[in-house]
Image (cartoon, rainbow, N blue to C red):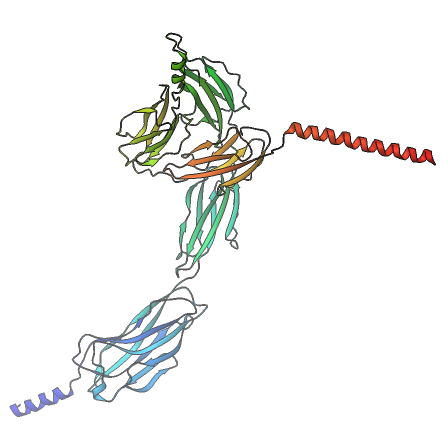
Length: 560
């Protein structure tokens, strides 16, 4: 073959060789939906290079018609002439014979397909695929093209439980209910919840749960795959079978003798001046009750004058009863060097006021009763030092404070001695409890219950003021239960009660948050003796009137 013939053959071959280019036509777009929702999917042409252009493309849509239906489609290439569009919701064909408007980019969305998910579609995955695609380049040559698939997940909206099991409590789960009320006497349960749909998630109060006395509310949240929530509420009432006994069976003072009655809460005792310390022994009526920390049997140093000693007993149920001992230590009598009258008058002017007015710890004033000689407060672990400042009730009094300013973890005891002008001394004890690391201070300063012996009071821990009409008592027996056992309570004004008196119960939380409950006392202003005399006089007057009426009637009949 000569050279001229070979050249002609090569030229012919060049003009007749078909170009082969790799590309993919696949659906893209939303990949999650739910029943009854619309979703948009795009037929996207993906190419590996841009050295050629596409003039025509066709293929078939494959999808589960039981799950989704095609409701509309849109040609995204407005300058393409639509040859046949989409037939029978699956066969599509598009072409453009204008050379200047051919597809010549790497990724091109050709058609927008709008589907609707059927209401009865199965939850889970469904797919839209392109099968048997063909494409032609600008020269009319067939182009190698593959079809792709797009997975769409129909999200489940099931957010229900198939069962709830509570270990320790007999319980029949009802699928139609979302709230359950149960009763038990146990202190711990295990809540096990079973979801109806494995694609849903469970959160909330499941697993081991501690039960407080009274109503305990637990919530189980079921979240569907779609994100909708359903909340199941379980109310479990733990019966309170604890003892309410908070009395003493015996109370002994050494060296003094006291006639004790468990139903009498207040006692007055006078001791000689030479008795500077007294031992207090007390026996609980119920072994399940306990003494409040710092208010049980102990040795007590007596100041000259009044000494208010409190004994606090907490029942197993948490109710606190207080016995009050007012011990009066007599003043010392000095017989030697008896002064003249003028000097006696001068001595009598010396103040014997050795009470505290204020206690300030680290710039915070502490709530206390000036006649209670022991006060306990709690501080956080990061409080490493303590600064105690006090103000005496009498400016003529002096004081000393003994104790280390550096705090150790646990109890730290400080002695405050107040010396009056007449040199009588009253000692107060302050116990500062520093908490362990990472244990926060409680801010609960509420009472849980409040009882007044012999009277009914409709107590609510969120109601702070009450009015109580009483008889002739000058003091009330007040029994309370703290909402938080770590808090403390101080009662003020519960003595010499009269009409208009105010009793305050101040609850102090660990962080020194306070709540004040006020009881306004109403007392009859009438003298009972006068009331009796008036009743007798009224009776006599009434009898006299009746007698006169009888006489008048008899005279009238006799006249006739």
